[in-house]
Amino acid sequence: MRDRAWFYLARIGYQRGYYERALANLHHVQSPLPGKLEPERRLLQANVLMALSRFGDAARELSQWTDTTGWSQYARFNLGVALVRSGDVAQGSAYLEQVGTLVPRNDEQAALRDRANLALGFALLQQQGGDAAVAALNRVRLDGPFTNRALLALGWAETNANRPDRALVPAYALLAVVGACGGFFIVPLNALLQERGRETVGAGHAIAIQNLGENSAMLAMLGLYTVALGAGTPVLWIAPLFGLGLSAAIAALWISRRRARAR
Image 1 (cartoon, rainbow, N blue to C red):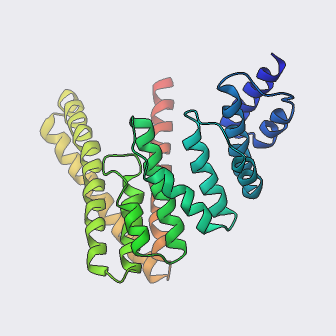
Image 2 (image 1 turned 180 degrees about the vertical axis):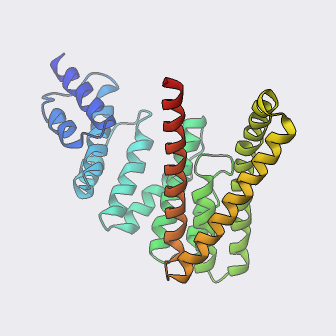
């Protein structure tokens, strides 16, 4: 019972980002846990070691894995990642290839397969791999949670394989996904603004005010972008800085609205 308590404390600490404390709690476990808890404990210990950037220790822990339950695929994936991060790219890629080619039986296994192929693709890209990285990244589903990163990496892989024309295809697909996400956000927002405007100043006035605000914001951002380029700011810095500025403006507006309602 005491060992279970230490295990659950370690799992909570890992979930909250207290990795050193989680590892210390795991060291208090004196004997194997019953049933499926023991492979989960070993996998948790490997995850904690990886979170602490102790990839070699995590690889040694996972290399002794003998369990064949549902945790085995996760252990194989983590072992591949740990080996790649510790410098053994060839052996790590072999484990990731095993997970990346499994036949998924449910959505959870399909997501794990996508994650393995994405990790394998990035590992091969670091070794300037072209065709091998393309093969791995093409196995990532287009309707999964890792689609955007896979499409971006696929463009780099096609470029490494000396096929810059094919690198445009995933770029177009990524832009289409981003555009669709923007549409899902902006259409309900416009409907909400017009509905609120109809109740206050009227739908026509609300649309006019909205258009004025949007075009003024675009003009201001374009001016700031031109000034930043003229000052020699790298393009890769401009986009994050604009994102931070926009987030700060939205946060300030939200705080002011909260204070106004409180009064």
